[in-house]
Length: 99
Image 1 (cartoon, one colour):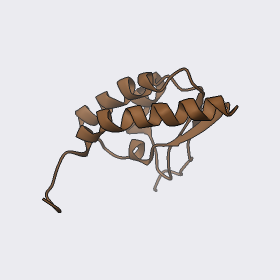
Image 2 (image 1 turned 60 degrees about the vertical axis):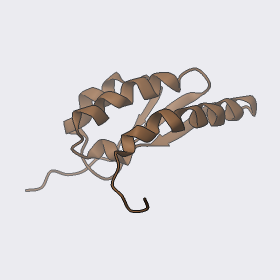
Image 3 (image 1 turned 180 degrees about the vertical axis):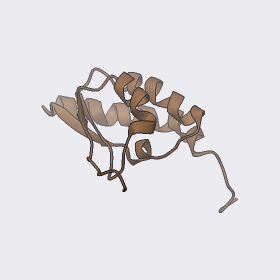
C-alpha cells in the first residue's frame, strides 16, 4: 500500500543491475570516470546498511573508474567502510568541528 513503511535496503538488489547497465553504456561511449554521490555515508547508519556498501560497489567494478562523493558533513563514523570500498577516487567535503 502507498505510504506503508518498508526497508529501502531491500531495493538494492533490484537497482544494482540497472546501475551496471548504465555504467556499461557509459563505458561503451568512452566515459572513463563516473561520480557516485553517497550522502548517506555522513549519517549514522545501521550495520546492515554499512555492510551492504561493499558488495554493492564490488558489483559495480570494472566498467569505469568510480569517484565516490560524500556531502557536507563529517565521515569519521563511516571512514572504515569508505576506505574499504573499491573506488578509484574519493571526494569528501571538509567540515570544521563545532566548538
